[in-house]
Amino acid sequence: MSIWFHAEKYSNRLIVPETVFALGENGDFIIAKSHPKNLESGINKSVTYYHIIEVDKKSIKQNPNLTLEQFENKRKELNIPKSLDFEIVYDELK
Image 1 (cartoon, rainbow, N blue to C red):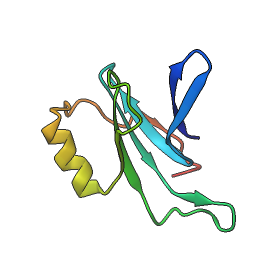
Image 2 (cartoon, rainbow, N blue to C red):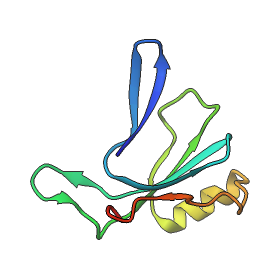
Image 3 (cartoon, rainbow, N blue to C red):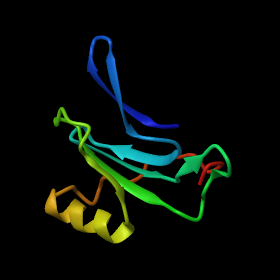
Image 4 (cartoon, rainbow, N blue to C red):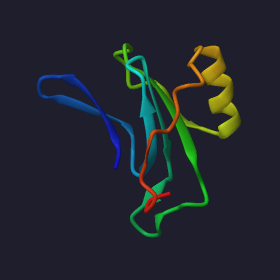
């Protein structure tokens, strides 16, 4: 699973590549967790990236591939409410 931005009628841009395994949203922000994946070794579950996507921004330059510490700091900086949590979790990809 990945996250795409639909920029125009026939234009899409990849924001978060495979493999997204958890996400939450509140209309203003989308937060996600992912593991990197490559063709040779598959999903690397020992590495977790955190992502913050500002819904109203029309840019693919969001906040991708953050560490947990960077994610928590950026979350405070953007005033993302604590009530926004990872509501959808795909345990088989976790």
